[in-house]
Image (cartoon, rainbow, N blue to C red; front, top):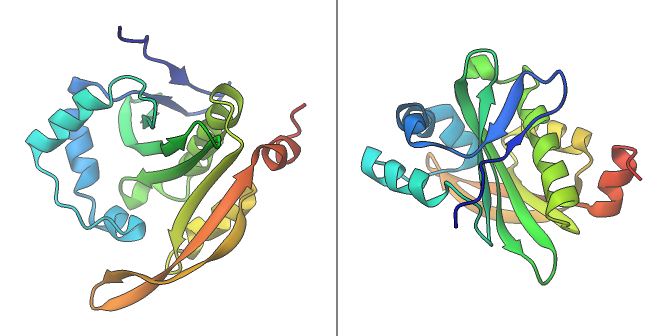
Length: 188
């Protein structure tokens, strides 16, 4: 049975998070072709329109091991990117989080921060996770700064984890626990 499509939003926020729909195919395809976004996230996969269409159908409802949402600018309906909780481990109440925003015009405007806050709330308060973790490449100091501002703590470094443009790059691992989230966002 298909679950209703949730929309995640904060009052006054310029963005909403929702499941991808078939009508998002062109925008989702364009998002996944963004060279800078792929570099910042270390994505080395080439996506075809058919593969993306199949993916949209697959992620169109809640799965036990992941929650994929697209980031939509509410005023225009424009798809800005995606934020995902994947590797959901219900036994240990943990998950990985990842985010990608399309185009430089959308970066530095707070959309990514807002999307992360919405997804953290969803993970900790709805899915009842205890730990959310992520990996960020050392060449992305802007993202590292945002994650630390959000309340993530550095846990370690995976040395030479990514080979990109002829060089190896370190991956910084970070996490947040549910009590840290509640304290950072002053939730009871």
